[in-house]
Length: 199
Image 1: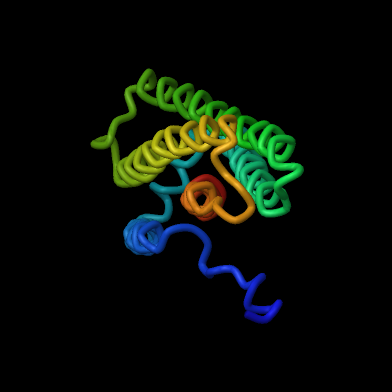
Image 2: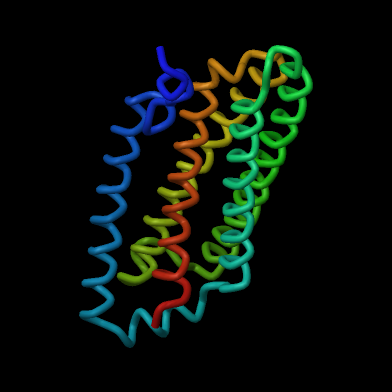
């Protein structure tokens, strides 16, 4: 085996099954985004007026949080890739801290979204209020569920990392979870400007 073959890593990272899930999720959200765009085009004034009820600051803060959280899990994967037999424990400890930071970010996102949902429901806004709020609640709640699942996945990665369960040769589980978390981040990066900003 040549040196190039020895260092070659499989692509895309993680298990193949997660990429099937990612592609299905991307198609699902793309259809919802397209439905939102067409509905908005049919009644721009209603969508613009309803959009004023949203807190853009919260949306922006959550965007920064998710991007940061995605960066943290990427740093954890990078650390495990660079670990060696002699630095395995040290690398695992550092990687676990990065994963923990990613989980904290996810938790902060969920808290802010819960606050937003509580505020909206307190205003009497529901799925049946109008077309804009139907899409807003449907999209953000669906994404919220993805974040919840992401927290569970990241927590499992954290526990295994703390137990020195990943190495530079075997960290596919971490890459799989990280790939899913990057999907969650990407979906919000599209959702935030589409629903909160674009008028």
